[in-house]
Image (cartoon, rainbow, N blue to C red; front, side):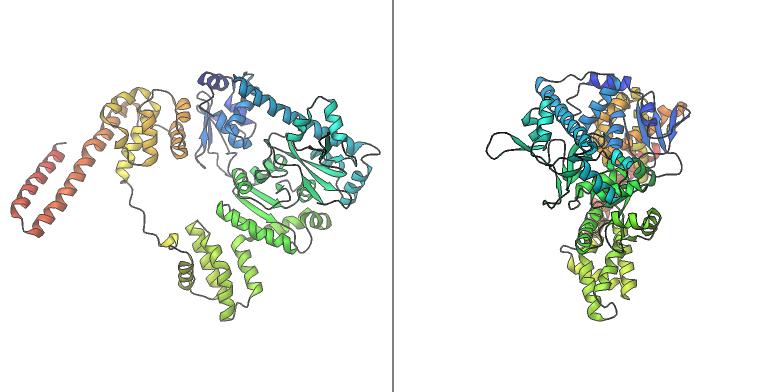
Length: 585
């Protein structure tokens, strides 16, 4: 997508968007020297490490290593695709995007779809307020304790007990039946003559994206209709497995607390917000997906699961735990005494709920506790059964430090030796445990890394130095992977970092570029030329010379072992010649 947007349009958007103002809408920034600094909006920190360069239109956080331009900031802060970030910033900058006729048609169709969904949300809201039509829904909300302020904030609505009132209302506003069908609002009649509303006689929960646009609807039946909860179908703007109910309202609290509370149902999330538990989201009444957990990871570094206390809720909770482990998001578990989060909060209040969250068990401790509750931890057979339940859980843990802590905790609770648990784990995991894999080959020595980094840093800051470096070095002379990627771009371009960062697809190399942009120069101005020459000399002469001496040393030893004295003398002369070259260099 970045490649399909012309560089002229990119530059025009960048020139018109003040990155300090844009980022300042999400974080308090203070000018420090040439940069603006503040607490990073993407991770929790006490000391400001988030930097913005207004002149270059770039940002970087030294705490979490994220960085980029205005497009990257909008993508990250609002969880948008690059195309969506372009649309957002173009509107902000007043830049008209040039599109092909096909792109224009698709953009127009997408815009129409958003408008039709927003019109549906407004119409549902009007029906809830209607003195007669919305009476049953309002009584239900009153019975559930939902106040008008919360209903307004979540834009709750009502679908009347009729076959096609929504269809007729939106049709009269000019929305085509095919568009309403694409949005999941109506279904074609089996007879083929017309359409009927999908949601009828239901309390309506609009589902929003992170730009506060309605993208789908959930309906709660107000009679005995099945299913009790029904969502509109997936569309080009709505993917159920990647959407979280209430995230548009919860994201600021989530970012502030760096923790997300995950509940099952829309009403659970809504009630949490009514009681000022503002970091709660729901999984749309479906089983939590890995994509949803990865969305959470973009907003918070940890999560708390609070599901219903019944058997199905506990099973859903245990399934969800594996997803958090796979995404490497630390998660804690709240076990409600009874009922669901909605009922518990209403009966006991927010303070009691927060107390439960404070006492929430880390995920593995919860799983261990549940296994111990099912088997006797004092008997040999009980310990075997508990281990059989938890070994697959341990095998799925990717982080070796976390896995080691889980093993230690399990061994202590069951009065077992850690070695016994590890041995059982090794036998279970086919192909061996990651902990027992041979160590990775040693990387380049620190001196080489330092020489590579100094060269890269100076080339980032001083484009005029790049031709001289390119005459003596190539990409192959850089060993560390991210150094090699960045060197490949620097040695072939005279552009500044605001352009370079678009040419780099590797995320690690891009982060390194942003870090070098905002770091202080590695040497003083008067020493730059000398530092470049010494670094190039180290990479082109000293390292190859050391490698050649090491190889000759091995060859001499082999010749001595074979008794080949002539070969030994010849190799020793070559070795001495290399030593002389080193001393004269």
